[in-house]
Amino acid sequence: MTRTSSRFPTLRRLDARLAAAELRIAAALLAAMLLCMAAGAVMRSAGRPLVGADELAVLLMVCAAFFGASANLASGDHVAVDLLARRLPPATRRLTGAVLLALLAGFAACLWVWLDPVGLWRTGSGAALARDSGNFTYTEPTMTLGLAKAWFWLPMVPATLGAMLHVTVRLVSPAEAPRC
Image 1 (cartoon, one colour):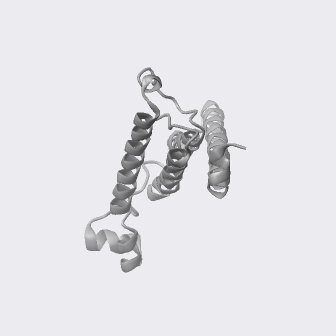
Image 2: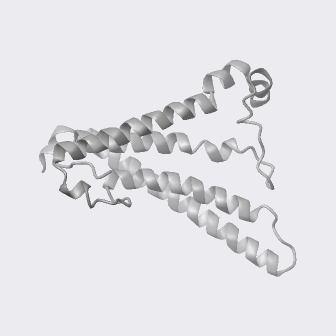
């Protein structure tokens, strides 16, 4: 048992479970994307195209990418150009992890302002929020599906919070210097 796992066993278990759940979500979204693309191709070849199939496939892929990226931060298996990072001392690598955490926190703050959950709660609906503040986040429809785009933007919130947890766990783990 490593020193890390004895210091933060609950946090490490939570991190691992969250990463596994994120990977399952990403896999399910990618499977739905493939089914959507296959259905679109079959229907197009039959002369009855599914107008929204391509748009839905792209939106599902983007949602899957957010969850997959977050899960990969947990394991350090994400794409990394580490030519310089390999040569840095552990303390400096930790600094890069702290910078990544700060960037993720900034992104979370942007999401908070953009999605304006307090304003949505106060006004009671997306239409009222749009009318009162000019924030059309919850009323803007997708091009061909006619669904609110917010349904495809909302997965950024749990994916960002998960990524913040994964980076934090890697920062507090003395045995692992974050590869960011």
